[in-house]
Length: 320
Image (cartoon, rainbow, N blue to C red):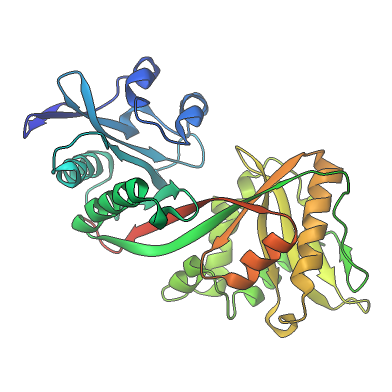
């Protein structure tokens, strides 16, 4: 599909042969695009460009968990930041409306928009302008900010992390046990996604979505998952060390409501990191949490997880 509006040609790329065109703008996801196309997490019809002749003016791409799925995220939205013209936001808005309208079924709510940004991006004038222009374009189509998140990376040193002696750790008995603990952990959660979902879903439904949309696609065994207990066997929390399509990760970590405030999160995180090292042989691990979840962010920092970037997360509540 090719359309001409305000002298811009807006269309999806023809295939992998146009990746050189699509990646003319720098972005941390560029190196993953070829692999995503090969694995079916992206398809050319989801990767859109806005062109002025041969010049790339703006671009956009959707992402799915695996081949055959519907788009789960809109995670690339860029414009020529070197262009001095004042209508960069207008170009982004036009690209958004065109691509969303052509890609999604009629009446569908757009998927979440993610933008990876530098830690402390507001203090960098050039990046601040770029991020706010992209956010403004999303807002003009009806989107709004859900949350900002922090991304962390731990790098292996000479000493393997180890929890203290207050807790015991064991594998999960079965999926039902894990589901029950996850439902209990939702009470009082500081996670913005969970807090938003509780307005329309039950805890069981939220947990089911996690198993269907994320946990089922981990390439690592559930025998890596750990439940933390007191010496008498009472569960305190849990951690899901795993590997997704890109990195070894701390996929989910939580302390149950009645055990919060005692510092158990440090031991649980240490155990999750230890499992990744000893079971998976990893040399690094990734993790993330909401900017507003200061207790979890502090726990990552204490465990030696360095902040590597932030993420802007915006959502739509209704179709365009």
